[in-house]
Length: 216
Image (spheres, rainbow, N blue to C red):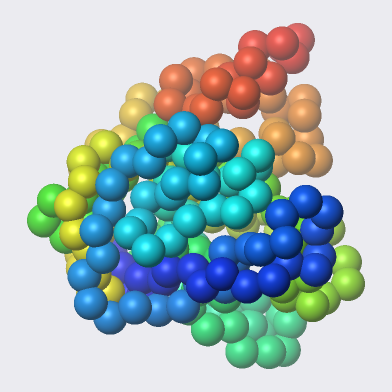
């Protein structure tokens, strides 16, 4: 399991969504080491990688969405389905991984990347209109949601530096079965699954509250 590509955002205009006129979805690979740190709370625009930031501060950034990962294997599947090349970083992911099933990772699972950095899986990515506009594909949000391969957001537990080519090791798996895929399905098309999320203590507070309010 490895970090195939490390991607940092370039600010660009955002004509696809009401609100911020700038987006950081245009992630491009970088080749040198990048510092990873725990950002402040949502609302500041801070994220986990030096040189990157969120512009839609209401919905992105903060400790629970510090770093976003997507698997190269899933990008390859989407390439075949969409009939177009999808370079590393094109889904707005900071980490393009190889050899790890990111959607079957558990909420609260911890990854060590390189020698120092430890990240914790916190929640799935929920797609937005900026993502659809960026991919320039009608119906993309519906198609992406139906596939339930969202990729996880991760929070930073131990800072340090990472670079493309670093090994990824799963150093902790919690004692429950709440995966990124299950959480995504519960938060989108299958709300009856919300009670199944209750054992996942590492979920963000908003998701935990949704799960607790849904009758079992």
